[in-house]
Length: 85
View 1 (tube, helix red, strand yellow):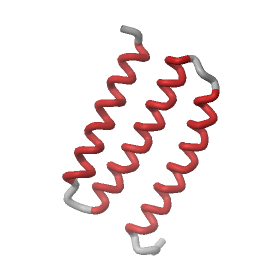
View 2: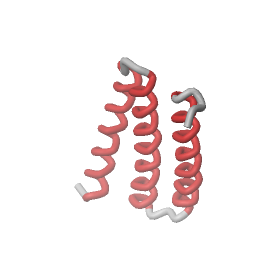
View 3: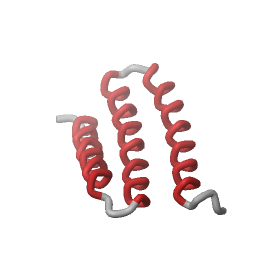
View 4: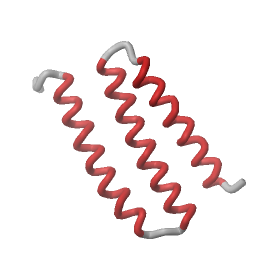
């Protein structure tokens, strides 16, 4: 088992924990943090999958997914605070 396989299993475990926290989170803030963790875990799986398959095209997708995830996290934080700074 290669180190990439171990990393994929670890990130997949984090992904499952994030899904559990989204379903059982007592507050909206807990669910928002878990959603961020979920999206970053998916991006991590994309990176590890691209490295495992040795495909360079995957990293363009990772760049776009990271930018979209960052913007989603900012807008979600803004929504939770009610637009206050």
